[in-house]
Length: 399
Ligand SMILES: Cc1ncc(COP(=O)(O)O)c(C=O)c1O
Image 1 (cartoon, helix red, strand yellow):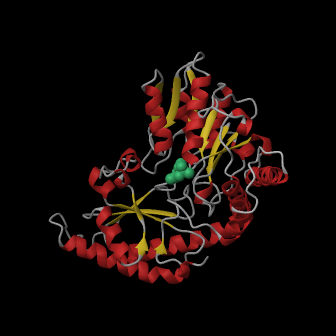
Image 2: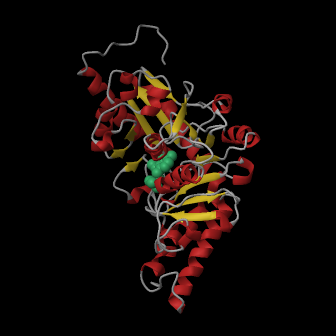
Image 3: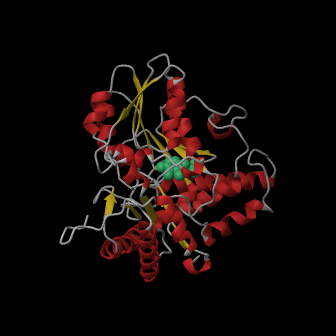
């Protein structure tokens, strides 16, 4: 699909992506004709099973893993829950301490909060102003009671890439398994589970041009998990429920394409993202960069526009046909500033002004002038009615 087919200039790929035509095509037979339950013994059931196993091979090979270690789930959030609660419940008699970071996705943070209400103790390791977790801080938090460390590979809001390899090396020396949420990393940066050294890795299909409602958890052999969903023996007894054959097939095809195109994606999207940033900075004063300059996903740009709230900018751009995202938890109806921005040391006001531009494979350099002009017009309009707005000082440096 090219961007021209979409009603918007879509810059919200970290939220979700459109399903690629190649993926749709691969899924189609399993949404209709090949309707068999993968556990059924007849031909249609066996065809469904075979398609699932081929998809498992594709997802596994996209991350340098063995197929038998992939567990398909209903989404990335479920994989995070299965990893964190699964290890916690299984090891409760050994210890009740978990280490995570302050910038995790709610699927990890809220799971940890739930475990805190159920007898676990959780250390939320802080981050620096670029959103980076220190491996030393994680290592220092390990106690004999620690049963799991969960630190994401790449942050969804600012794109900061965490030193998960170093964390895993320190954890291995202490015998503590490491989970990483790689939902945002898959298809954007190289991901090889053996090189990474983590023990559990969360993936989701809909961030890589696959369908919504399918995820996977890669589990290193020997890591024991308590299932969340009990019932049939699906997915080695770790996730009961008739498999979503079409969704899994789509995930497999999307993962295969993402792995094959990774290099060209990273270069092209990275160049477009960098050009967008330069042009925004040249056109608009008093803009703050959020995130890490080098250790960052190639598609993600997060900026705070001083004196204006992110929601106002989002709505202004939306009316110009441009889709972006804010960091605040507006989806839950609250306008609380993002926990990620606050953890990075932004004031609540700066955190409220943050906008995430997350680019995808269809964005083009030619779209930049319309994005920048709509953004400049929106920010100037909002600043002109803001009682707090102050012009930058004459000759003063831009942020
Ligand atoms: C880092 C991260 N983890 C987990 C998830 C949840 O994935 P899903 O939407 O498949 O539940 C997301 C999606 O927003 C994410 O960005």
